[in-house]
Image (cartoon, rainbow, N blue to C red):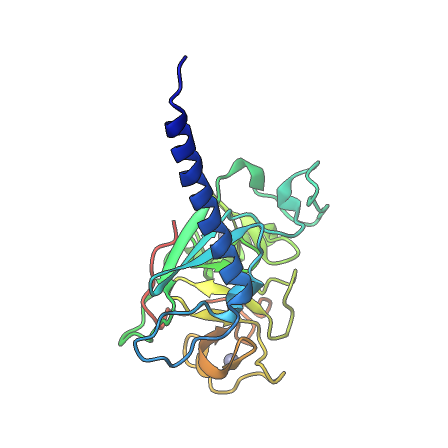
Length: 256
Ligand SMILES: [Zn+2]
Ligand SMILES: [Zn+2]
């Protein structure tokens, strides 16, 4: 079969160009660690918080004034739900397993949010399914399980408040794999606001949270302050710290 060398060279140049732009996106995620500025009409910047997301599980880049967050949906830590034989399998004999394991699902998802999300005039209830993407790569769900209370599914939650429902692996509770009664970044919700652990930047529990666990204030990634959520320091069913039982205070986009 004859091949035209010019076609091959052109193809090579196109592929090389694509590889370069992908590299640039990665570089932007790592080095662009300046928090959003007050530039009027300036170009958007990636929040420094995005550097906390697992680089193997997520790809994050700017697209105009939006941030695109792509994830494999797989958690970067141990859980029984990886299934025996997996490197990240953790034996958890007390967990009432749901009938599947992580590798059986395509958990990949994309969320596009504004690089400078704004509060909405009215709040929006969350739905079943992913309401956010955690820094581990896996999905954040709300306080419901199949439209019933979370207590119905509690026995199947693993050591870090996650499990597989009828679909992908996801967290309902404070993910102790990387945050326990502290101010660690948990992830980003579908309205573009970040959610942190129970404590604030200064090591104290915030006292001015709104109905969704949000407030305006400094974060480890933006000392100038921005609106962000916290896991509320209030027990649910006298037992659990649910990640996000409230409504979005911004405008949610779909995660799919
Ligand atoms: Zn669930
Ligand atoms: Zn705070």
